[in-house]
Length: 345
Image (cartoon, rainbow, N blue to C red; front, side, top):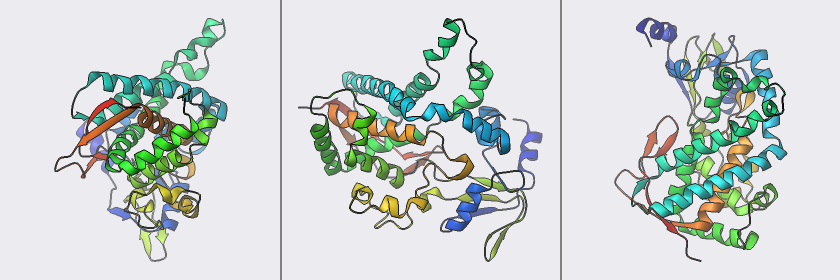
């Protein structure tokens, strides 16, 4: 990117505002996305990588129309179909990790390959060619240009970060892993193919899934740029051009008991902290830019936990960096060095 374009993009940036504990301000930011309020602000190279027509940069009627066109992608029926693909690829990858037998492999790279393969197979799968094979025209979204405008969002590495955190956190908390295994053995003793209905019955496994997301939200903030002077709180007016950083990580700590502790029981039917503090569970955002693939991502993580716990055992090698955070810009353990082997029955 040329220096002139970079300077133009940065022009008017007056200051940075970091929001930690201000729910009303966060809600305003999330619900007011337009050239007259706040616009999403990424690194200057963001448009070069994702394209100016990417859904993350859109707002108004065009944005609403595009999101509406995605609705059929995330119906219960569609999610059930995806689950079969997700489980198959998860099993294939975990089997490969076990067979390779490599020691101290960086989990981030394994999770990235699994996530990319799953997203590509689900959202850019061979079934897109079905209308053409039947003699009908391809749907408009099947053109190379239209798919390129949105496919990068579906390949976004938030799920890669969560898969990596899953392996790390379950290695750190073997008691949690053991409870997941007991639930899986009770619900699916014969190791049948997962179904949407079966995953809904995985009460504790889904608690673990939610706690992983809440404990380590993959995107720690969604940065916005103020397009005018805006009153964010009773005593603060955000100046035009300011870069505003609402902390999703801080939001996911608000209200929860012992928030720094990894505790899936907080998400269970007895504590119900996920229900009591649902406004603070901002892992998938809120408002017009809320993640359209929320249920898909949660199913993916649930299926991964289920298959991982029932087919494999793994050890994590700790270093001085293992409990530090790596920002890429989603967050990972600074290292997650693991060795996989088949689970003994």
